[in-house]
Image (cartoon, rainbow over all chains, first blue to last red; front, side, top):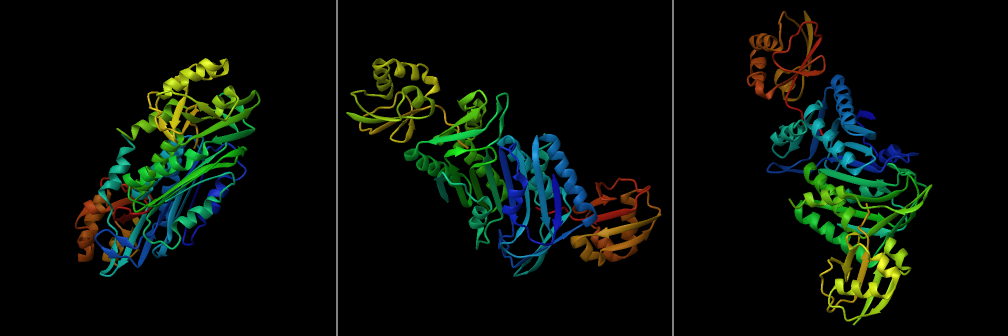
Length: 151
Length: 151
Length: 83
Length: 83
């Protein structure tokens, strides 16, 4: 179980390889990678994405989210990496990975981590578009996705 | 969209990097990797896993499953790799990857591919355990997972 | 009619072949299974519980009622366990 | 009581600071917001619609009714958009 917040890029393949290195108790490994797209629906081209965060709170929030996932599913390993700072289209923003005995647990835990992280980890995105720089608005569907885990 | 069946191992990181190389229209990349575990619940240690398949049918079945996923979700890219032959604990068995604008589509398509592939792609696993070699039985929950997509 | 018949996994092991040519006038998969059962005990054993057997006709999943007219290849195997 | 107050994203931009020390006797977050609103128009503007503002007290998400007794750090920010 591990959480990292960094400005630098990460090597997705190396992270996934490290997660299962030397282990024979993992049947299912799921990864999610968030990437900067060059277009937002209805808002035109994006040339840059600035990610602001609240350092004192970030690791704590991500650690709590990861601990909650580990309490809900029998995870063999998990990893969250989230970047901050200035990114550009095609860049990696963040990743989560979950390893479990079964695919159902690995998928569910990865989706849970993403849904919580989207709305509970203190990151804010600002897009630079042709009409200026705009803070990305939170989406109702992200809150709804989060609420579904408590049903 | 791409499907491969091979005896050789694959490089998960290189495959995921290739899937998004030079693209800026992917917001979400999900991967699933199936690995050989050294224990099956209640059946003791596994020393080897033999994967038999039906070559003439395999690519056709995997291609049909991938096409069905592409028809259901707005995928930017997808990949299925499945190995056959003799594997050992810790080895990679197969992978699927899905790339989309949104995380919900990428996750759903990856789970759909896995559920279909589990029960509709012509592969059969034989485990070598202390009490001999045994064909792995299909699980009712895999058929149930598949049926859920038609509801 | 001449068919290629394939067997996989424990069906292959019980029957002792992975592939054979079969001359048959079976109209459906079920008819073909009935013919094979009559042949030798190893076929009767392999096909003793058809709920545990899946079928593909020309590489497409099919059921026991599937017609064989025009078919070239029939495969018998247990439920799939890939992934 | 002396608090560190932090602002993020557009709250930081509207208020023009990312961090400040605030002397206050506010009992709750809501009281602190009311005090800040009185100070200057930029605070009143930033806090004009509290439905668009989230709060953390000592790095834990909190609501407007949260008590400030013993607190050292209060942060205001819009709904999070990570991932």
